[in-house]
Image (cartoon, rainbow, N blue to C red; front, side, top):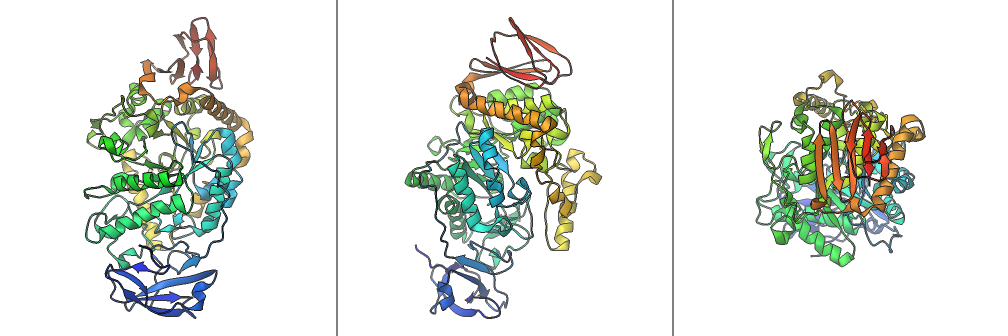
Length: 582
């Protein structure tokens, strides 16, 4: 059904009025309720509604404060203020863009506010050529929907349809997508549908958007209770908006395991159905990538095979196995990933926990992957990402703990491994800047609760509470901004060269994008890890002593900074060194 620009679903209030303009000089218009609890203006709209833009909000019952539109596309004054309706005149330049599939691609994750010193989408455009040179195919953007405050990771968003003003707003987002497409880069937008932020969420005043119960981050979204049909439509329309109105190529769906839905057709499956239909209509690939803690490949099994029908999912097991192998850290959820055989199992089987006991969870976890049927690219992996760096006490990166050879080995395992590799902004040059968790809640009590919650969250990891950075301290945010000037100096240039060489090899060698688990075989001898990919051999020495290995290789395609010696039928790998051999 076609809705008017100011129509609003609001089953809870008994009276709804539309305010067009502002509190001081705006026009108030009565609205009338339809049988479906959608309200429409009952009077002619004022002349201001036909201007290039108009600010508006809703007066609910006797509440004197207007509330923003649940589907607001702009919140120029912040999430507590009036919404703005723009008559956008943006002219897209990507008519020739045919899309970018996930299979075979390299993903690059970034946070707009810390990716550049300027912290906007327009500033991010200036760095896109660097990503092209790196061999990136898809740029994954952490959430950009409107949140309360000046800076945030984005997972505290409350206006799911509005692009945050500190990043430049909706037209800046369109310019960013256009600029990516002009360079052959697809865009993955990270979206959050499992909870809403703690400040500025006015949805419950309008209708039953939430239900009883909580997940880790907040109240549960009502996906299966009374009124849930419109709530589900709200989420599905948000999915369509990113694809249709903003031309993105994929969505990363945050923490789908926190979606509480007992409906006959799960919301994720419904997303997959609508996205596939929209992809057929737009004639370009549209991809759904789940962040799932379930270790269950049914998430990405096609619907005709009895699965949810999503395209891919993150695999934290790969990260944990690589992190433990290179750093030796075995606290908290890292405990199960030593010895080195854990990495071999992940690369050959997809998951480490595939029905095995998880000491961190205190129970059996996961299900086996059907490696005969599932392609390897459906698992998106990383040696660093916003979660695994930002959710450390100090936001410390691997570069703080590993030498150049070890960092190159992390890149080798990620980019030459069997899965879809994702890089986290700055890792490619061993960035010295941390990436910490930061917030800017204006409410003192909320800021205090957030800081205390971080300390409690880290108890199981064994980190010193005194090391936990205060997320509300503005310096925590400012220190997390990348320093682009360091790329060409010292170790940063050395590591960046490794990433660039591996990026080129991934494009040149079909073995590195082969989607078959059958072409992957791993072995472990002491602290030496080897992985075959067809006629290629990845060799990584995570130990502290030199290792000599008998091989049938004839060529070194890549080696870490300390180099390897290939002579006759043997290769000598120094401590912490690695290579890709043919």
